[in-house]
Length: 138
Image 1: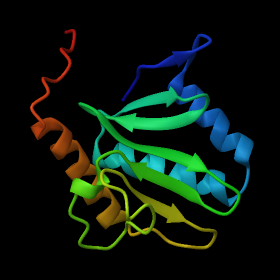
Image 2: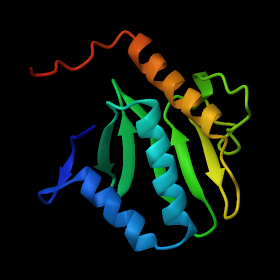
Image 3: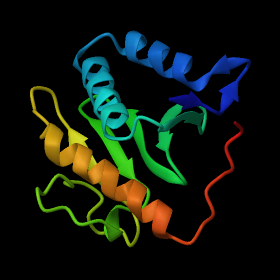
């Protein structure tokens, strides 16, 4: 896993770790769990820290953001409207033309298998979009 975007000399991964610890409740636990599932689904995912404090996961383009609100952890998929969602995970931002989101509330479980499939589908969509992947140094 790589951490690409930096803020004030700190890696995005470190900033995400700090956000999880700072939350210190079910939202931090939930954000940590979805982060782990994203890394399981796509081990080479890039973690970024954007827009003054939003965790972002990407691979050949943005996959999703992870935001913690008072009553929900929101995972917004950049191209969610273009993704098949047979498990019905998307439950927010359903009227948008491009994005879709998953709101996870306290005590709710997330179908790990379906979520990882959705993450992989987002990566496949990014990869097939005609963009050339960034060259990796060897």
